[in-house]
Length: 314
Image (cartoon, rainbow, N blue to C red; front, side):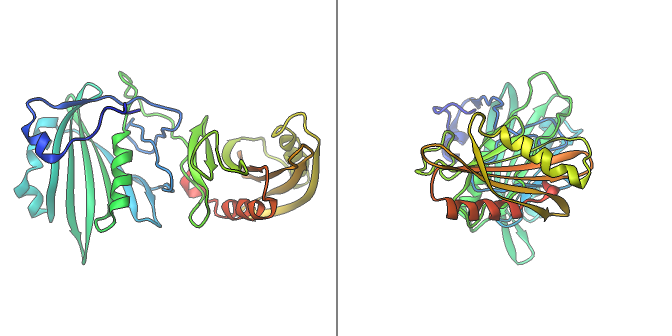
C-alpha cells in the first residue's frame, strides 16, 4: 500500500528533480493477479473488472488494463518512448515521470492516442526487470477525468512478490455489475469479493448491508442433493442463530443451475440473510447478502447483484 506521504508529483517537479522519487507498494488482501506477468493490482471501488485475453476491463466504463513482459532492456524501451516515435504511433505525451519502484527503475507515462474518431487516454507504467521489462497499460476515455484517475490509482497500487517472478494464481475478478446500486467494492479477502454501501469494511451504513461473492471447489452434486447442501452452507453464515427460511427456489444464472434461500435470523433486528449457490462441474459459486434493516429494498438489491453474475471474469 502506498504510504499517505507518497504522492505523485507534478510534471514540472519531475523534470526538475535530481533523482527519481522512490515508491514502495506492498501486496494487501485487496490485490488481485489478472495478468500473465507476476504483478498485482488493487481494484478501485465502482470499477467492475472482467477478465480479457491480455488483462481485464470494465466494458461499461470503457476502462481496460493490459500487461506484457518484453524481452527488451529497460533503457532500450525507454529510449523508444520519445516524442517523435510516439507521435508516429498517433500518441501525444502529456506526462513522463521516473521513479524507483520497489527497488526497480520505473517510468510512468501519460499519453493521448487517437482511435478512429475518438481520443483515448493512456497511462503506461514501465518497470525495469534486468534484461527484460514489464509494461502495464491502462486505457480510458480521455474526456472522462474520473475514469483516468481510477486507472492511475490502480497503476499506483502495482506491486509484486519481491524475489519471486513465478506466475501467481489468479484471484477472482469483479464478476458482478454493481452499477445502479449503492454497493461498492470494499475489499477482497481470501478470494472473496466483499461489497458494502459505503465501500468500507466494517461498513458504517445504517442497515449494515453487505454482499459477498466467493467461489470454491465442490464435489459434483446431483440436482436433488443441491438444496440440502445449500442449506448446510446457509447455517454457517450466522452460526448460533435460529434461521426462519421464508423462501427457497431453484435458479439459473449465466448457464448455471442452483438454489436461492432467503431467511431471517431471529435477533433483535430481525436480520435478513440471503444466499444463492450455483454449481458447475467442479465449483460452487456463492453469493451471500446480509442486512439489518430495509429488508424489502435490500432483498431486491441482492437479487439484482446476483443476476448480474458472470463467469467470464474468472
